[in-house]
Amino acid sequence: MDELFEKIERLKEERNAVIMAHNYQPPEVQDVADLLGDSLELARKAVKTDADVIVFAGVDFMAETAKILNPEKTVLIPVRNATCAMANMLRVEHILEAKRKYPDAPVVLYVNTTADTKALADVTVTSANAVKIVEKLDSDVVIFGPDRNLASYVARMTGKKVIPVPPDGHCYVHRKFTVEDVERARELHPNARLMVHPECEPEVQERADLIASTGGMIRHAPEHDEWVVFTEREMVYRLQKLYPNIKFHPAREDAVCVGMKAVTLRSVYESLRDMKYRVEVPEPIAEKARKAIERMLEMS
Image (cartoon, rainbow, N blue to C red):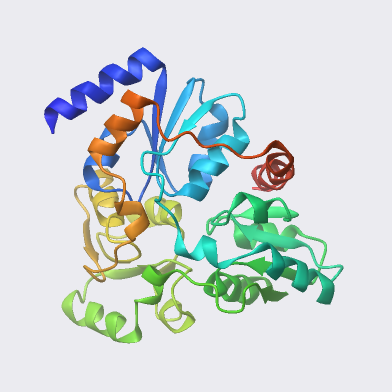
């Protein structure tokens, strides 16, 4: 592994490349990354980087977002089929159908969506800023996709009517968490607080001490000395590395995103070595999607 680390560092220098990695990436990929974060943080960092090449260790919609924001840069994804099941649940026709029913409602899309759906959005959001952005919109009704649980959380926090598209969009990892997991966590770790991602089911959110995006979890972690973490398992590695004196426990060991785990240290190395796989977004789609993403960055 040390040899791969060295090779990657050498190639990064040769190619003026930067490695961006999501908080759900395997530990060794997190360790080699230059920039780590949640979707919002990585979108912000993508705009600011002066690298010529971005290697995006994450799933395809994230690499697409980086390309949309950096059309002049080379953006690589180490594994071509690293994808997000939830992002793929939302299709263009879902949005068009909702717009026919609610023609005046703005379309608010989670960044966990494909580029062609983002092109139909008025603004994109992440779990970190969805409530803030929906509150700012001058409409009491919004079309929101694709995560139903995040839509429900936004509706509860803003008091607005939030129309989920599709009706049952969800993250299979966060849907695994149950009320029984909450009860078990309370029994096993009586001194711990529970941090829960807003993609979890409402009944799990209701029993949490903190509902937050992964970026929010990082910001709030110092408020207590022990936490049980209700999101993708690798978030515990990220938190433990940042705060070695705080205890973190995964709520479930099987809370694993297959798309995120498709990326390995070797695939990151091969991506840099062979300059593969290049991410391209057709400019007419990219231009529309860029407006929605840039509006998010302005509003948040």
